[in-house]
Image (cartoon, rainbow, N blue to C red; front, side, top):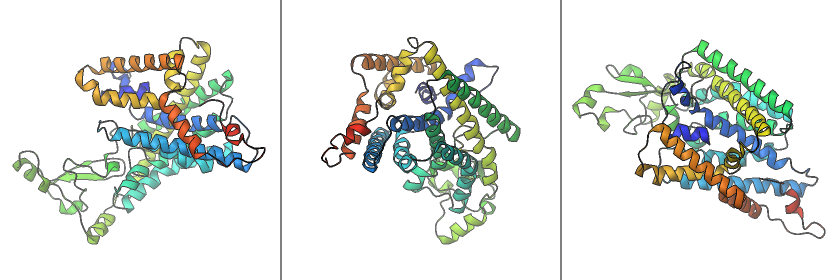
Length: 412
């Protein structure tokens, strides 16, 4: 949450170890990666509290998780309607909860193998699919495949989180191992990234499907664009092109300056000029939101290291970090509140980046601490639990009236 706040207030300086004022830029992309990993850990904590011995208990628990996922998805959609510049993460978060249900019974070994396989093969396959499908951007594929939070990337992190959540997270040795392993993975991922290429560090603009100011589709035949200006829009090799002469003559903006492909012939032409090297490039992409293999390795390792560090800090000084724990205990409510603040409060109070982050972070930490102290579970967390209970309602049977209660985790 604290990292996302920093990313959303606009810290944009390019990272440089020798310039401390640029260190805040590390939050870009890495905060969402950490969020995805924690989604898996959370699901693991929800499902490991009790040993489910019957098919009915398993069914009830899985329906409860589906209900929570649907609630998170609905809240995410509502926040998107506010029209803030924030790429709301909750829509994909809710989808992940639902998608995770069939995999909850997988062994830890199987989850780790799947996570590694997806981390390595997912980005190249995604880049290849985007080339073959001529950069499709329909609503479904934008949400699940080619969007800012591609499913191939997030499922790998979800599986890793599910496996990590099954560890004895209260043990110091486990926390130390997470810190060490995460640090090694992050060093390996970013180190290889620097050696392979200096970027890209820009978001994958092509993933949105609308890659230029006039919302026109990208042109398909580079050979036909003599005199045009084109810029790379992501690791998949997609370009956005425009006619500088037309653009300048129109005073800086004109729909006619951009090309919009139509018809099957255009698709064939786009297919012939697809960037097949993009699949290879995806292996070495490590910049924020590129969705590359090395980003998964580097940022995923960093997320694991942060988890291990937080476990150690929370154990060493529980009272000191209690306010941070309170914020972490109600991420759904806190995330939604910070979007509301961006929509209705911050526009009225112009602040610098650092001061804006400080106001947001301190406000949410104080609110979470007070709420946790006097009201317990966060309001939207209660709503998600309640909807999950509604989804999980099962016919009462003689001698088994407590099935729903038996599947209820000890904590949420």
